[in-house]
Image (cartoon, rainbow, N blue to C red; front, side):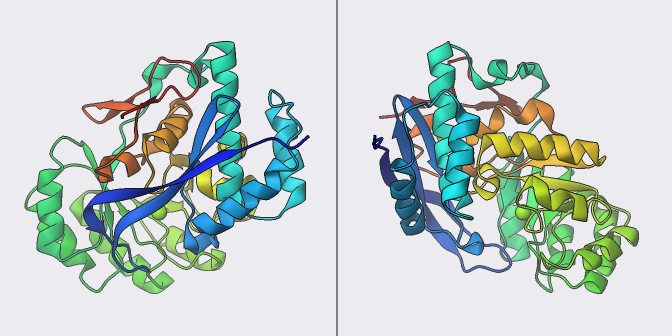
Length: 336
Ligand code: MG
């Protein structure tokens, strides 16, 4: 039997043009929402990982011929899908998320309750400031008054200037994300300077495949190093465990909630810190990830805060703390 997967592409408009070290400025981002038997999910493919809305649409078509209708057994469904095509984790994440929403609704429980998690234990999310002129980034930080933690994209020769400008307008904790821009030696020098400006952690200072480089940075730096682009799946973690202090897990990068849960446990077994991150996504994808946050140290779940046409409401913020919806499944409502 072929199961029909309904999918729809949505253009999410950004409040501000968004830039990181390796990419040109974006003004919108495309996501794909999926519906299967009453469950809804979403994915935000990233070119960096070789996926686009076109590859996701094609993968979903392939998956639909493999789904047999036994949707309650999400483990089996995902194993079946994993064996059909390699990679395509953003597409796989859409299926996994949709089936979790469906099952939560069927059982009448929010996802956090389904996993036995305490909704009071969610962290505060950071709010991301994209790369720009130091004065513009400082102005954005000033406008981000309601968010208690900032995540700042760096990776240019003006990195220290940016921190100087930010510290004129805010004393909040700052996470720095270099998005692979630095060499190991450069990273050590910069981190040494950044540490003086109240930076809490450094995300992905160097190239993704250079694990020795990350290890060098970690051994010579006073701030925790969090891997993002270097780690996609649970199987990537053991090789990285000595080279970093923590990992950033994203549903669309790893293939969905089941893999994210595996990653959290594997990371903990290696004594690593865990951040749960996101792409630019609507409240559908962000809320799904937010249900896992009682298990993590850091949440960077602000994709929905950066857009002006969110089709959903779900997780909300109270002084930056993630407040999970107490509705079955992911628990989002449409904002028509
Ligand atoms: Mg990152």
